[in-house]
Image (cartoon, rainbow, N blue to C red; front, top):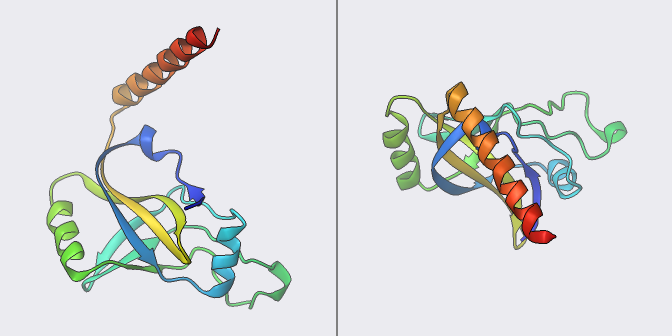
Length: 147
């Protein structure tokens, strides 16, 4: 299992409530691009419409810029492959006030490309400061033990 793209801002901006795994519907050049670690999940989110989940605002650039059709949109909506039961659970959980579904990472699981998504709640500014302070303290402790 190798990780291709990671959304580094999730831990800082959100409190993670629950994680899930989903398949993602891609075209061939997008798979090649992701396998070369190209892409970004910053600002991306998941929406559910008509019983289907979609990844919105994720940037996956074309594999070969010159061989890409002019109509290719790197920010297009991509369908996520959940079971109906999982989508129903996400809808039920997502209806709670202040919860959002965001992507955490894109990785391979065997020959398949998977997307890890999380049900999250946004952090306030003081919560973000506490997270940064805790990271710094952990770094200092690790540095002291390394010596």
